Image 1: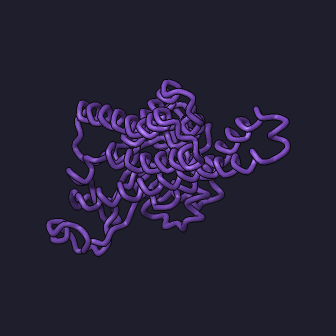
Image 2 (image 1 turned 90 degrees about the horizontal axis):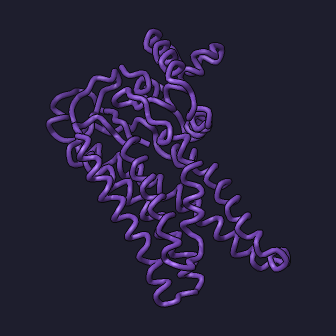
Image 3 (image 1 turned 30 degrees about the horizontal axis):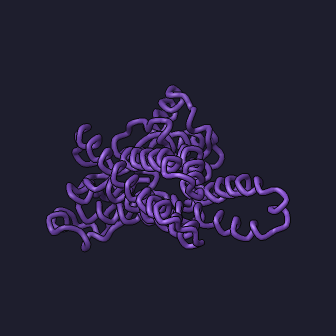
Amino acid sequence: MEPNVRFWITERQSFIQRFLQWTELLDPTNLVVSIEKIEKSRQLLLTHEDASRSDLEDKTVQEAWKRSLSTVHPDNSKLIPGPFRPAALLPFTAPMVFLSVLPVKSLKSMILPQVSFYTYSTVFNIVNGNASYDRRPHESILLGAGVIASSTFFGLFPRLLQVRFSLNSVLSRNVIPVVILAQLSGLNVVASRSLEPLRGIEVMDKEGSVIGYSRKAGTKAIKDTATSRVVLFGTSAFIPEVFSYFFKRTQFFLQCPWSLWTLKLSCTILVMGLMVPISFSLFPQIGRIQCSELEKEIQSATEETELFYNRGV
């Protein structure tokens, strides 16, 4: 069994335990760990199938799990490219989120932040989504290009209306951009991983044996991940806006107007730093689904009452 799958199946964790787990996996050093060290860690886990992360005395095993879970895809056992590992989400998207909700001076100033954000989000979702079904490279490229174009269009359209009709109310300047960013982040997950509910993803028993491919499990995986993205980016964009709203009414802002952007950027980074592990922890990495909820052909293929699937990140 793939070590990462074995870990997530056997380690039944609560939300708090998953949160603490992700704070370790999101360590920035996981972005630059060498391939040689990752391969050594994987070899250790493959040769010691009884290695448990609860074994606090063995630091070598602890480090091996950390490297494996943060850098290797659980479906195909391939290395996740550094810029798209879970630990890269915060440093790459925090500046983009900050720029995406800034007041509009001209539509041109909004194009680059929107294109950058949705391009990165789309590639991140495809790379870290479920990879257990048959998918050709050109399908991912075409799907990704379409998702990037549509997400960018819907992200820019409200801004175009704001510039065109000179809308300067708090609702149009502060609230609507946050709502749109949150909703489009969730829809981006649904669109970029839309092949999963169409072709079905692997469902397996507790031993890791594949029982079949389920479209219903694919739908559930996407729904849970999309929900976590809405919570992540919605909260990360909303809280800085609230702080900025009250900060503008202070005497300090009147004396130093430039400090608003420093506060807003710092607040965005701090909130995202907390929300990334929270959003990743909302649902288990390896999801559980009752066999009675799956397709009839899968129900007839096993006597298990509960099966497992990779939700993706």
